[in-house]
Image (cartoon, rainbow, N blue to C red; front, top):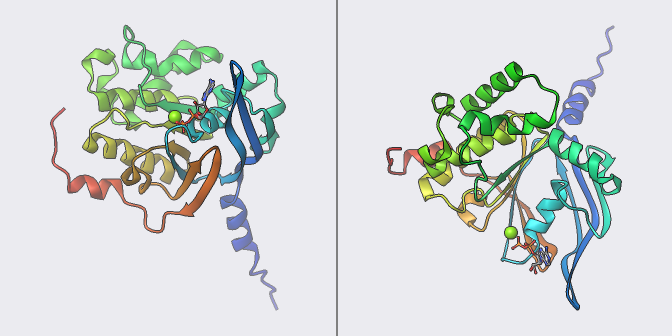
Length: 262
Ligand code: ADP
Ligand code: MG
């Protein structure tokens, strides 16, 4: 008789899916503003699995950007622990923190933050200037990233020659070029019209389906509905943390929206 361990395959699958990427324990962040101390984060606890797509909501001043800056290793908490892929990054020195940030995290901001006198290709190459990638590899990988966001034919354009949506896509390509473990986006659709916003969400959903973990701050409830999970901040704490039961599918929503020619 052949004994089949029927548990084996499901266990492996579960292990593959449930990789803990982010573990945050009782994080607090205080800012000293003259005489007063601002408590921007007041005890935040959260775990995020690899492959998740999280929307972070909450009123202005509730601590969203402070939280993202800590997740992105741009800033350190006043107290508490932050484990990124099991490594306690709250204890790393500045230089090590910068290395982790460059290798593991991609950033997208509301204002695109592209260099104006630099082409889409060169903007996309920027994060690789800190690593020892040679020029040919840099260019090849930057071109690949631009293709990923549908801008393969715009590599030589300057930001001023691109629409807002296209500039944001260059910023996404730049965020992807080092093959990060997670993408952090703070209000990435804040400066975009509604169709262009959904186009950005379509790219995020495609990247997420390919396995990229995405954490996105938005104040627009419609945009949060494209994520798998919604976390709401209030006064420096997590007030709600819910699964989005039926996420909207950006490619479907786009079919219902009027097209504006680029
Ligand atoms: P959100 O992104 O949700 O609007 P923030 O994380 O930017 O909120 O800010 C949370 C709180 O911390 C606010 O009260 C804000 O004024 C304060 N804060 C943020 N950054 C600083 C800073 N560098 N210095 C002093 N206070 C700050
Ligand atoms: Mg903010």
